[in-house]
Length: 379
Image (cartoon, rainbow, N blue to C red; front, side, top):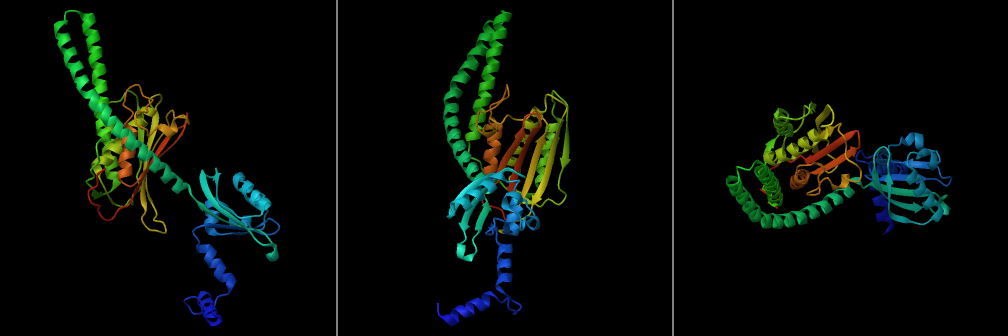
């Protein structure tokens, strides 16, 4: 680059819209302050010399308190980060695309790149990092979506094969009951067979419904209107145990384009799951809504959480809750949550679950705010 051109570019870079020149330090401060990635710098004495606002937000660390402190003290709440910085300083070479897991204040996946500074400049280390938790969650959701599609196709094939034999068994059993009605013991056994056939037939129907393509018919509405309707229906039904429902609806929830009928299926399944979870106690179910502020790319989302204080889900079963046919209930096809997951995926949202045995479970449905109706979708 010719010298005069380089000087003009530098002048533009260091001159704000007001026309007053800016020094390099001010320019760098502005750049670091507006970067969407975290920036962490250690000086030659291994003390924190820089932590930009995005980085402090990701790590939940006060940058002023971290400034000038040894990194092991500044990030004592994040042992995995301390170990990473120790390795980067020891190896003294570029570490690219590394990943670590932070556990505090929430489980977070960080992607990091560490670059040692040359000794000629005094030495030190610069680390760029980004919160990959949402990216990782989206990848997991995509993988689960593929598995659900494959299982749905398999379930549809099996259901079609089972339907005709079940119908034949039901008809034959009915004829036998009429013929052998005089024998109470035989009639009782035949009624038991018919009950089992009915249960299997319902499972077949659920399988076919799960495998059936979803056709969205969107309307512009407030999601809490759909929630209120589902709550009125589920609470008014007869239940074998008492429980209480607390509604915490955000008053300023924006409208969005969704399919209310499909959304009712999602919330109905989640509510029934919560009601069943508190069957061993006089439990509490909290339904809350909130609007998620738009990010730098715009958009925004609506969050719906359904929390119960029931028995919880063991850690080994938690990854399976959205899989078809997985259930801990004595009755049920194990397709309720799988179907809810399928519908939420088609609404371009996500559904997550957090649970602790003995303390309860929380399902969170995140739906994007759509201001313009989409064409009818099917899959």
